[in-house]
Image (cartoon, rainbow, N blue to C red; front, side):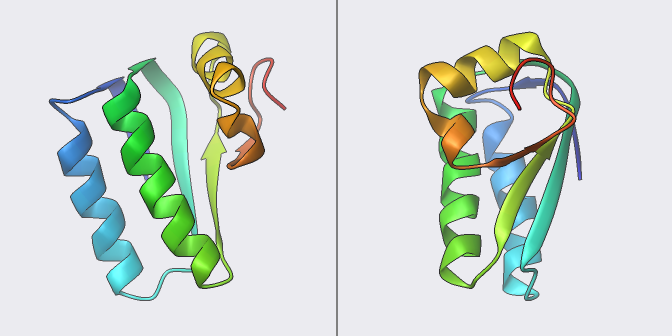
Length: 93
């Protein structure tokens, strides 16, 4: 799944619906490509955390791939870099 631009109150509900659809289909690992993500707010974080919790409850994990410096900074500040599996992130792990 690729997320580009801004993940905020205006776009988070669409991502949430797409993630929940995958979860309802039985996904146990979801990778979100964040390499094109420029901005992430609390609404976007909430959608990612909710999906991550649901995946972990089923023995799976949410992977964030290619998060840039600014996104990694937000994840570190909120300590969510400990919640998500970060792949190929700039300064995040």
